[in-house]
Length: 285
Image (tube, rainbow, N blue to C red; front, side, top):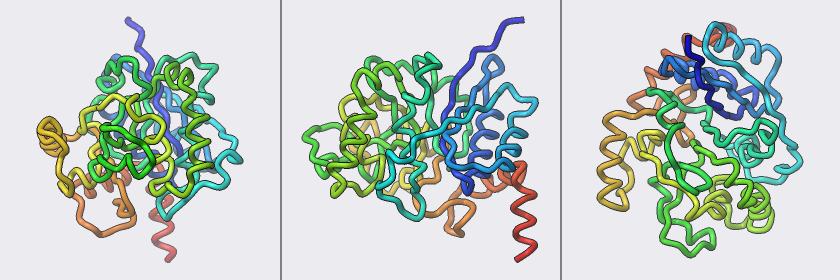
């Protein structure tokens, strides 16, 4: 019997986002190739013991394990937050340091607020060359790098999914440079850690097919694609997304705004070990 190859997947969550983390994990495992197993590394922002037990149920009898990582939160004490972007989102910047003793060449970072619809091993196997990360263009911000003081013809990427080459990241001192940008250029920051990462990683990222990060603005075609190639990719992503990313304020669990994948997402959430907990909350209102 051949051994399964292991793929490291990283995400970050606090207690409020633990149920939605479970949906990402469940949908990822449901679409995983038979010859693959996953190690989930969760950057832990005070997830409760009860929620961790529920997350353990997700990987029970699955080709997967969970490990938790802790970040020095003081590094991010003064960062800009919003109603749907908390300090937790910034912690991925420290990821290569957190995994220094694991000796991975690369890891796949995925936000909590996604629904996986394809085998992520195909994405993990993508050759990103000498780049620091592989990522997907952000359709609404594609041409805004000038706002960050960057002179380039490169595009702006969405940081909710990143295939990270850890050696290249460390060699380029991306963590240190990004933290410095957050501290010294805070007046330029609108889109949180994503702005800072784009200001540092520009021209050092590999463009992944948008099907791997179908953002809400892309799905609803709110922005013109910058090239004919991207126009083709956008259509392909909309027709058959591999990862649906519920970007923005409106999430399946907190909004009645129409999204074609809301029902599918809520069906997955209903299968989660957190569903009973949420149902009990509703019944006591």
